[in-house]
Image (cartoon, rainbow, N blue to C red; front, side, top):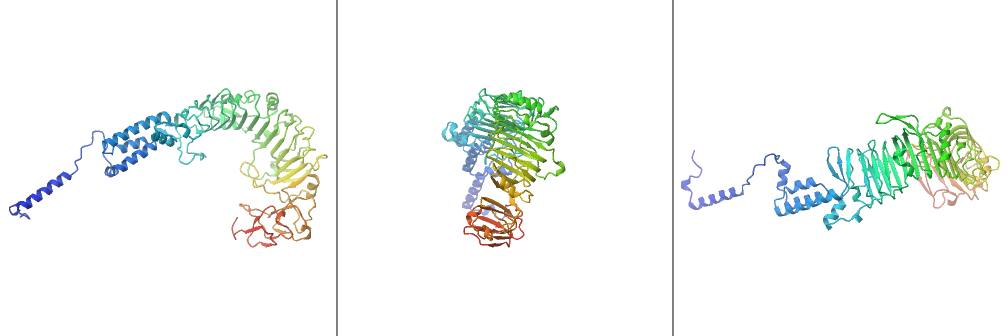
Length: 591
């Protein structure tokens, strides 16, 4: 095969040009050194980043330092070819990491991996000014795991790992007043150095966690949720409100309850149930739940619920003379019936709340308890009384009198009953009735026209058994005239007569109607000076009224409880007062 261009025919000038071109191409060829032994080969992605603009690499490395991602920053620096820039940034990285280890909160997980927490603002200030300033710190620290209902974490905050076993440098934030933290797998939580701490919230912890808050004299509130057998060390002058829920303990002494000013125990079980032998005699608030049945802890031991029987009441009378608020939640009606509340002798008590845990479902009559007769002769300073909820054929509160309870201002009763005998109070007071069923009310002699009665429909209630929506009571067999004659005022009770036939009294200041057809065109409404509350036979989930016909007739805007009303589609509306807005629901919409 003959060459395309025989060398004998190449002129000296062309030979020189070819030689120069070949030499240039050889000089442009990249020479790759072999990787040192033990180094991994460069991935395709890393190979692309070798050709990245050096300024971009420098910016990425700086960004990682500010984000406390020091390992990623170190990888970026290895791609810099300018040794002067690389050495300078290495110095910044070393100083930043040394600063972070000494002045930023960091946690260590079970694999001994380190993670810095919420320190970006502080590291940025240090990199810009060269020194630390705690005055730039937020006084609230939130360090939660990403699980359950822990959604109070602010945007941009870091979550602690579920297997956190160590946490460091909390004391580097001395201006902290509020700390919310997950205990995770910590065995010890050292809060020494947080002298300004006022509120501590711990959510979930390993059995036996020890918290040292002995350097926080201003601590005023502690919330502990899911922290079994937790041990708490407080400053001698700290008098916090202690709120504990969903936990078990060998004894409440481990929680330093003798220093608590107020004690809240919800779903707490103990091995040593002698609560009153541990708390301070100056305790002002006691809020406890009496649970049903024992439970076993992770240690295999049995833990019992708190009692509230006659023996407990006897100790309560003798050991807490300054108690002002007593709230008791009973898991079962049987536990409520075991207690003799008339034996309570608490001269400083101002608020008493006795609740039975309930649900959203209606209680059938077959599940109602025995009749209840209630009196409190040993609580002369009582201002508020709540019985929530009770179900009985007859509930008699006539033992609550002005002679025994002269300062009583409010009585709140919820549930269902055939007959209610109201308190025999001869002074003005509020009577709030959240009723699911009520057939008869009897007002004792001497209590006539003394109570301002408010009715609330208890068939509409939330998950925890509280009435929701503040809806009026409908379809009751109560005698409305009797209510008007025996109470100073009546609110939230829908009359059983439609407005077209109802004759308002001259002294009526508010009337509730619950009908789908509302007609106020009759002459009896011409000079009415009170307020009318309009409701349909039912209410939608958004609160719109199921009204089909509405004639405002002689009513003015001042006679109406609202300036806007949503009605059924196709509802006939007449004589709308000036300033009143009517909205129609969509056809087929449940709203």
